[in-house]
Image (cartoon, rainbow, N blue to C red; front, side):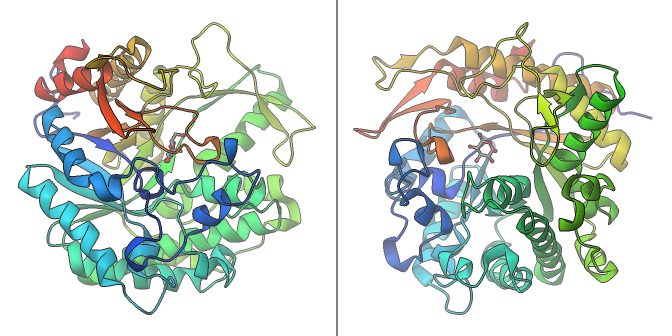
Length: 452
Ligand code: BGC
């Protein structure tokens, strides 16, 4: 029996928060003895990031974390999802621990708790220590052990204060953009490497969950990006292309974690580059997890395209709906559909929406006390309703984190895209609330009621 969901607000205990990631906001990447990460190297390689921008300063959160937490408190956030920079904790990725790196996150966590905000940590949001990339990065089978070693250090230090952990954020981006298409760090373009990166990322996830069960007392999950795929037509080749696209983006990671197998389409997509993996590896990957973290931004309508390498599938732009500055269609129904797909396909696991949000063209400088961003407000309103629809249809959704707390470094797009509910003037580091921030504060205060 689905539990009773109130008609116009969210169930008691539903968790509302904001999300960020280390390299995107912190700045000071080498401060206090931290090691470089692959994103530091990538952004310092000319031509990799729009306007050759880097995360050297970003939102200067490494130094402004206290006043940033004051802003979070002002919005009434119940939780804050951040990521830990592995190379701050272990400058060489393994071995020597840097107490100053742990100290930064310790102060952050303690202050969040003192302000009544629940800290939730992601262990890996793409910033692999460069020293480990020198050893082959995710192509090295030892990477699963490296990750478990790092995870264990962090659990032992912080599990008394952190109740929700995520292993990896969006492994798809690392494998697909980082190793297949070269548009994210480490910037490789190699069809033979991407499957290996996928598999080692998932082995690392499994190893970190195993390590957590040995020492942790709370909850741990995996964060995946899912972009539901709808066929452009009922023609057989469009349907097959849609199935491949869905397998590659949406099932490649969640399926081995939750069901212990990769989608059969992987071989169809990668051909000989997709090996037969040892059964013991799949067992290691298939560890019980406490929740699925879902990052949802948009959908894709898909058609067959023999030129699109290696998927032979391509998105068809849907001109009837608005699009964000990323060129992503605004499609809240896709969030409901995705939550119900997870419910039906994977036995209704608990889900946190770990990211949802939109880039729109806010001005570089904010003029006045509040910046109006009606498109972003509308995006949040309609997507929060979409989550509620899924709850009412029986999906076990436990919380929602807006992406993002602050405008920040949008990876290969540099500072050209603004996802924040708080505007950042990168010249002065002044923060200005956007109307979406006050809207979100009202959402939290009313447990969702203002979205209706
Ligand atoms: C990532 C974020 C990113 C956001 C918007 C997600 O893929 O986890 O780091 O900024 O989407 O592109």
